[in-house]
Amino acid sequence: MSQIEKAKPIPAFHGKLERQTGSGAMCSALIVAAPHSGSGKTTVTAALARYHRNQGRKVTVFKVGPDFIDPMILRQASGELVYQLDLWLVGEKGCQELLHRAALESDLILIEGVMGLFDGTPSSADLAQYFNIPVLGVIDAKAMAQTFAAVTFGLAKLREDLPFSGVIANRVNTERHAELLSTSLPEEFRFYGRLPKDDGVTLPERHLGLVQAQELADIDSQLDQAASHIAKTDLTELPEQVEFFAVEHDSQEDFIHRALVGTRVIIVRDNAFSFIYAANIAFLEQVGAEITYCSALNDNKLPEGDILYIPGGYPELYAEKLMNNETFLSDIKNFAASNKPIIAECGGMLYLLEQLTDISGQQIAMLGLIPGKAAMQKKLAAIGSQWVDLSVIDKDNIEPESSAENQGEMSSNIMRGHSFHYSCAEIDLTPISQTTHHPSERAGEYVYQHNNILASYMHWYFPSNPGLTLRIFNKNRCF
Image (cartoon, rainbow, N blue to C red; front, side):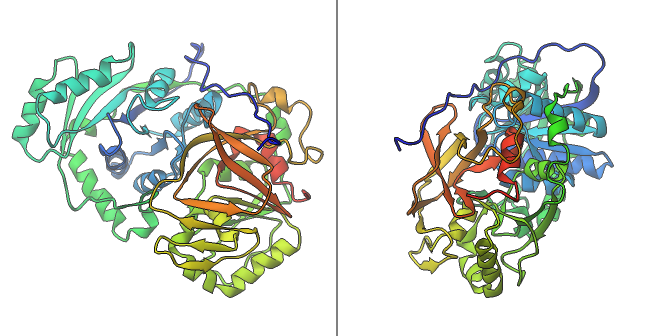
């Protein structure tokens, strides 16, 4: 689109954290990483969290990257909220603040990596080096012998000065196999033991990843079973402690404090709409918004509120039930007719379209608040971290002139986030902006503004630009 100007690219991160002086907070910490996706990072991280929680310890778990679903499993395992920890999406200071806060109140910090240890810009290895957090390598060794040592060597030694704790062999069923693996390792690498392949610990998958924790009736028994395997390894010991430092805050914090007092934000949250960053909710609460949750599946009315936020999820799996909830649909239409702001991300946007075609080809009439239709497909349509310039959002209501300075390298109009979807949409509107993929700078998702609705396939990460978020969630905003 020629009318959509392309903003300057945003760097991944600035580099190594400068050595800080003074006393930080000490806490045991590990980054759970692997050579590739599918090695068992989520299972191992969840098992570790549940084991140490069962010992009476407070475990705070983070997830590298933008994923929504793994954090649901990890939250169930730890009993604590799971935040993203990513040097680009969250930013260096954002990561530092989250880690320091966790270190003050936790016995153990666990961080599940993303993809392979060195994959991505930035990668899990970048995070490990930035904060000097040791890496636990998870290697799927079911069909491996002495090559286990070569994979371990590559994980530990590819990067100079990468903090590396050791390795655990996953899906290894016999002690003899484990002995073969451990004796192949040079003495400098610690072998923590093995985890067997256990049919009683299965986290099923669908097109967007693991099935959501709340959909698994036996999730707690599975997690306890996984924890019982940890009890037979050396991971029962708390790992070494890492020092985490506080962040010096700037003047923007004074500005955003309680800026949304008197604003009630309605958030749709259920099995159909559950892809929302914990940090987004925390930010809205921090600035004083009153949060009210509702279910588009089970509630027969929409609560009273000033702004409606519909996150992504699986509307395609629940389309018939969603569309049969007629009184709830009527309330959303009335809310839109009242010209109150609506923010819709990915699946939330599909919900507002005129029509959705499911994977079987069935056409389902949706809410009809956005002119257009979408169709599910078996092939991945888009994935990746992205950023977008939202200069078009009204700047006269909230944001002060100083906010651009407070955002550092970020323009006051740029929001970070990501997209991941298996549908393609044809929307009969001229987009107001288009996202840019990080780090490739490829053109990404369109952003649409229609009456009082702001919608895109992009999932926003609100703390990446507090001032812009406050403009978006201004209850007096009008288009």
